[in-house]
Image (cartoon, rainbow, N blue to C red; front, side, top):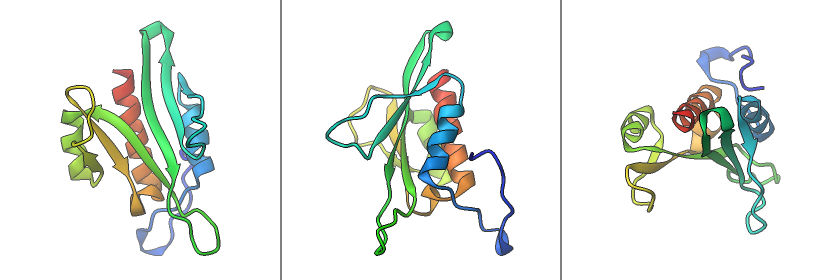
Amino acid sequence: MIRRRTRRTSGGVDSKVTSGDIHEWVLSLPWVVEDRPDAASPEVRAFVVDCPPLHRQRFLLATYPAAEKACGEIDGTHLAAIMSVEAGEAAREAGWEVHSAVALAAGHVLLTVEDEGATARNAIETFVLAAYSYAMS
């Protein structure tokens, strides 16, 4: 699971996580379920918050494989979430990509974590928990 910390390597480099770790951890969050897969893009996995007591049913995030290495292995997982414009400002400062040109409901932006952030444990945890917090609010 992502919550379990592993020993850091020298130089403070963050340990890498696999897509399986990410998916397992996201599904362990309260009220999170996986949305049905899209036949056109089976590699994309979508997760939603489905919380009847709070009358919340919102998109949480999507994951999709990062670039493929020469040996055929996938190197990391990209994450995408929809949050408020206000959250987007803080996200930009955190190094997340803010895609404000994407047509969304007023006051929302698409945020992604890619490249090195897609494999860094702390970056993934921070991003997922920010998306979860927004989806539950």
